[in-house]
Amino acid sequence: MKKVVILTGAGISAESGVPTFRDSDGLWEGHDVMEVASPQGWAKNQELVLDFYNQRRRNIGTVQPNAAHIALAKLEEKFDVTVITQNIDNLHERGGSGNVLHLHGEITKVSSCDYPDLVYDIGTKDICVGDTCERGSQLRPFVVWFGEPVPKIEEAMEISAAADIFIVVGTSMAVYPAAGLIGYVPNEARKFVIDRVTPSIGHYPNLEVLEGKASEKVPMLVKQLLAEERG
Ligand code: OAD
Image (cartoon, rainbow, N blue to C red; front, side, top):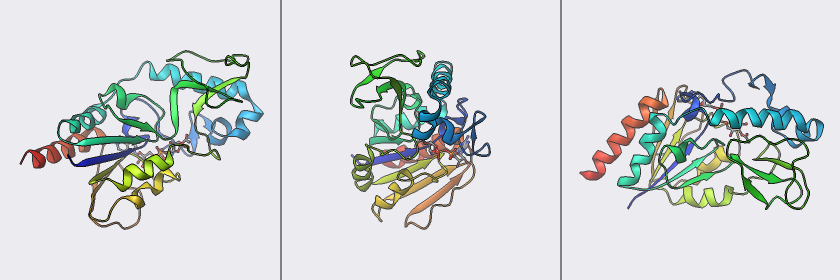
């Protein structure tokens, strides 16, 4: 089976009602991104940061996967598929994808400040200042903040380097190391970029740009790839 690797960003979830980051002047739901997504922001105001992610977590409980998430899952009928997502929502899983790597963490999980290997599934529940892990350390969102290492990046590089087809959906390609993954994809692999506004990504061989809404362009591409594979 050919390997299809999909790199997604906030744009794929936009039509489900999850706001993107850079479509709103660098503000994320009215907050400076550094205030709510950096270790410095956390050191300054834990309550604000926890409250911000509590709201994101509640929001996840109310939104549904859209046609783009659902179409990507269909690729599994004919391809060996890995979704590498920068998103912390769980819409790929709920859309049916079986193999999802979350580069920037997951909103439905929390980890311990002092014991980062302690990770807990909390679904859509809130966490507050004073909520601790079993070893007494404050819980924090299981999210990679600016300036923090991205533990899964090496795995993502290896997966990208083995792709026969690489599809980028709904990311401004502004945040590294995620944006650099396309550089690991073999020259001969077919590459597709789907975005409402084509991001600047440099020149790669075998690259096709499909400008438009994810909910329209992704199902079209999936249909085409499945038809080609069926012959
Ligand atoms: P951005 O907000 O930077 O980019 C969203 C992209 O989606 C843009 O290129 C939009 O044009 C596109 N877009 C918006 N609506 C769309 C639609 N309906 N169909 C198709 N495309 C659409 O989000 P990311 O690239 O995901 O990191 O941001 C990367 C990282 O920066 C995030 O994971 C987050 C953020 O800070 C952390 O939190 C660590």
